[in-house]
Amino acid sequence: MQFDKTLDARGLNCPLPIVKTKKTLSEMSSGQVLKVIATDPGSVKDMSAFAKQTGNELVGQEQEGNAYVFYLKKA
Image (cartoon, rainbow, N blue to C red):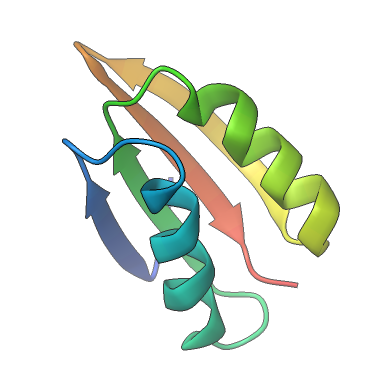
């Protein structure tokens, strides 16, 4: 998947992956895609809820080993 920026949130626990995702997205332009890599199992639910609440689109998600990878498109 094409993305414009990567946020490595491995080793961070809730709510830090979401806090850092929000901050990084605020620095990006509308339509750009952010790749987020996290190891917190709670981030799976959190990213989905975050996308719905903020209007940003969760365009993809996958698991790579013990990491969860999310692709968020800025609204």
